Every structure is written in C-alpha cells, then in structure tokens.
Length: 114
Image (cartoon, rainbow, N blue to C red; front, side):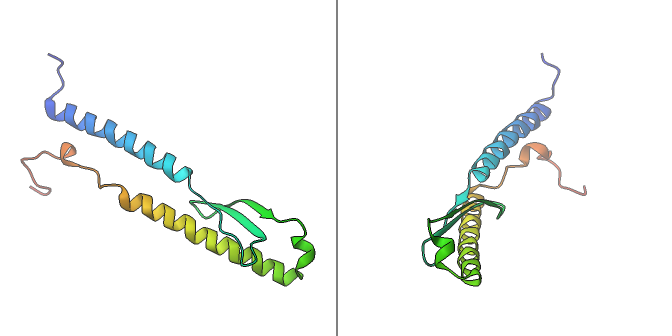
C-alpha cells in the first residue's frame, strides 16, 4: 500500500498532465513566426507571438529606392501585417487547446462553499 489516497494521486497525475500540456503549448507559441511583406514586397519583417520584431529583411537597393518617410511607411505596414498574422497564429493555437479538466483537483462530492 502506497499510503497516498487515490484522490490525491489523481490530483497529482492531473497536475503532471497539465504541466506537460503547458510545456507543449509554450513550445508551440515560442515557434510562432510571421513574415508578411510590405506593399512593395521589398521589406519583410519577422515577428514572434508576442509581437516582437525578431528580424528584418530589406531587398538590395530598397533604401535607395524610397524616400525616408516612404521607407518608414513600407516597414511599418509590413510590421503591422506580420504582427496581425502572428496574433492570428497565436489565437488559432489557443482556440484549439481544450480547457483543462479540473475534476481531479476538486472533491467530486462537494461544491465550492459547502
């Protein structure tokens, strides 16, 4: 006999499963990268799930082709599109993830407040 009550063991097992699910979810979120080109296609930023700029590609000659304000517009448009794409990827992952079962953490015979 192990000395651990079956309800406690069930809660420990559920907690272990939840930790594994969280680790998997974090790994998938950490892998999100969005690369949406600017209107001209000459600027391609890379944005992560948190909306952070992780890389920026400028095609050769891009800086010479645009005035400063036009270049800023190109870069910002591409970053906005990439950020929206990363947010969509994040939301898709979160929507696909089922809610955790918490029954193992709550005594099935009692309701909160009783």
